[in-house]
Amino acid sequence: MKRNALNGTPEAILPNDAASAEEDPWQRETRLSRGKALRKECQRSRHGEAILGQGDRDPMALIEESNVGRLEKLLPIRFTRMAESAFSFFRGTAILQAHDLQGTPSTGIVVQCCGDCHLMNFGGFATPERVQIFDINDFDETYPGPFEWDVKRLATSFELAARWLEFTRSEAEPVVREVLEYYRTAMAEFAQMSVLDTWYARIPLNELVAHAHNSKYQKRLKKAIEKAAENTSEHVYHKITTTVHGKPRIVDSPPLLFHPDPTEFDTERDVAPFLENYRASLPRERQFLFDRYRLMDSACKVVGVGSVGTRCYIALFEGNQGDHLILQVKEARRSVFEGRAGSIGFANNGERVVTGQRLMQSASDIFLGWSHGPHGDCYVRQMRDMKIAPNLAGSTPAMLSGYAEMCGRALARAHAKSGDAALISGYLGNGAAFDEAVLAYAEGYADQVEMDYKLFKKAIRSGRFPIESFPSEIEQAIR
Image 1: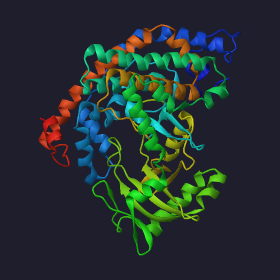
Image 2 (image 1 turned 90 degrees about the vertical axis):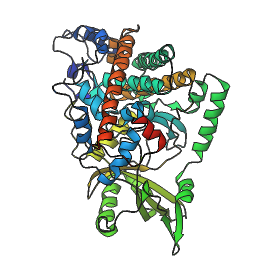
Image 3 (image 1 turned 120 degrees about the horizontal axis):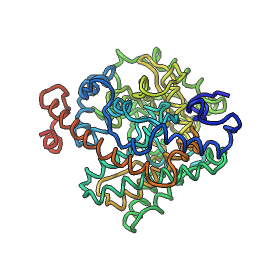
């Protein structure tokens, strides 16, 4: 009874002699036991090993590999953002850790991974029912892989964030422990829940306020959540558009927002077929919804750190009720996990991203879909739909710990939804053996990131990675 490895079933990922013929592999207790048995195959303490990939390792060459196919004129913006700190560098170099994780001990328990699971890729957004929830919100690199790869990247991101915030060792360590403990304990809860309850589970955004450890932080969060509730397409429309000859048009704000060169981008030739293919990727009832809007304008928009240089557009639509819709179109490139982790059956990377997002999120945007454009695969979603992103500036250890709890829970729910919670929980156990190992990994790998960052700054100074400008803080950082 072999099944797809993405389902995380024991048959797909355990040795043939892992269980007796009398055991029913569907039973929860059997899967918990099999997870526990996996500790002999891959001792939990071994996850503390920060092995750096397989074969020769050239971090600067890997960064150059990740730049292939990006818009060269935007690369200086990418390098400038990566140069701000070791933490920003980490955000822009998912390919490095994906390469390095190949050499680490693996459980073989496969889930749908985020692929770029750092703390800035979590946040708040609106469900189709207009409820604000907390979840993972970036899936450009999503791909099947060992569950611990996501956990290790998330833990490392908290370690680096704590260093960026200049926490002491005694302040930083409990923050990383928090994300690992909450991942483990939440997974144990999901292991006892029904399949449907796991799929229905979600984290209301107001729980983030409840996890705040002081009144000042609670007030700050409440204000951010209230502001995010107003951040809809209509709100964005009034901020970024003007009227030209009686029609709405996006206002250029280069180099981060600008209309593409008409010689490279033709509306009739490029946009119409793209939207038709996108429409076909939507469920039938949402095709009817999409048909009530007409395209008015589109422009290029620079976003994020790791995404800079990829083709990203925003498209302005007008509804037949006089309302407006703004969709974000993002290029979907090969995942950094491709060739390094599992396998996947999608020919279109846009479909890979969309399917991975739907598998991991508790609720997804009603306009989420994919298409193929003149420059490659893309996926589409609403822009800033009640979105709230983490703001680390000024965070205290208590604030970051509260956020770590939420991220650990959200990742556990995502992995439980696409994988086998009982199997993972059986492997993790009730104690902190796995937590301690990944804590050691996060500290060791953060050291490696800082060394790679120094090489990157040296490469900037040599001209290998040109940056956009020399703001005082960047100039100081690359010295």
